[in-house]
Image (cartoon, rainbow, N blue to C red; front, side):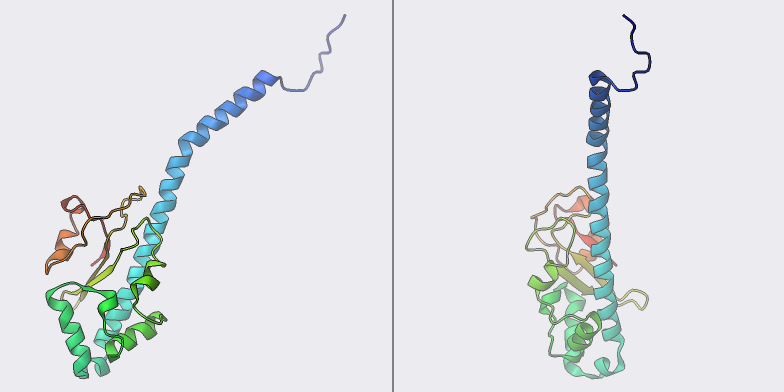
Length: 182
């Protein structure tokens, strides 16, 4: 008997080897790709913080806001200690201007936590502190969130204190990781 020399198909062993190689490649690539996805989420959070930062900085530099006593009192509260974003008085011109710039209805923590895309705890909070420099007047950060891209949830204490923004530059200094701009 003659064997057919024109057999163009793959054997079962060859197909199994190809599938095994593909499975190994997927197993190697999946964690790396997932880390990149989380880093993209962190970038989105930084972009959100940039928007909040710009809105607060523009509102604080508005001549009408500077002339209103309640608004200046609100801004001065941020000098000594970090202030939670939701604690900003929305009835002052400063609060109204910032909300109008952002297009938000309120500074409610429940509303902005939904905008945080990186791994975070439900108690994550945006903190604001006035630093007073002309180049960079505000320090802002999100507490209890992941800035590493490794999808770890942090439930440590929120960073606070007058010099908290300085401590944020050393991520190993505190168990509470944050995404910050300053």
